Amino acid sequence: MKEIEKLNPQILILPKISMTRMSRIKIAVMLALAKKIIAMGDIIVFISGLTELATLDTILLIDTGKESEILTSREMTNFSDTVNPEVFQQVLNIAIEFASSGREGKPIGTIFVLGDEDHVMQFSRQMVINPFKGYESEECNIMNPALRETIREFSAIDGAFVISHDGYILAAGRYLGAASEEDSIPRGLGSRHIASAGITSLTGAVAITISESTGDVRIFKNGKIFVEIEKASPSPKAIPVHH
Image (cartoon, rainbow, N blue to C red):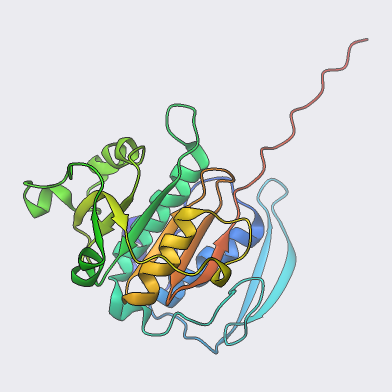
């Protein structure tokens, strides 16, 4: 799949995970913005359908310049100046996978903070010994697929992952001291979301947050939620019929 993207950067490969149709559209918009395939203000036409039926049954017209169900905020200007688009795509894919599959049968809740790493480190501190300290940069590159299960294990640690703009994991278990006002985010969201809003309001970073309670993934920029990606509900199991 990566080879296809390299041959044609206009093609976006979405995670192979069960998602709602709207979540797929949101992810496509995010990746297209990150890679500058589209820009805020563009009007996009989405055509989708059910793979099982091999039919197209939905057409959706979206104006990316307006706040909507797709983009809850317009705070994503200069997005690709903050984070390498490939790094953003990799972290988003990891977050969606972790939200879907969890860890050892239990849900995962964590924060990935990307970009503007100097300021992020300035406004945060270690809650535990940093498990990534002392390793060569290449060994801590988020693009390395061998790291995925290591990241999954360390997601059990309280605190956030801090990732540089070019994809190196600088720390895990990081306490984000730049808390946002609780009334700046929707009611019902917890401390991870408040911390994500806070750190992105004081820095140029992007935060991707997994809700442990719901499995939803939220992306923060400039102290606001930019996109919410809902976890797909499990498909109902067939009820056996006895004759």
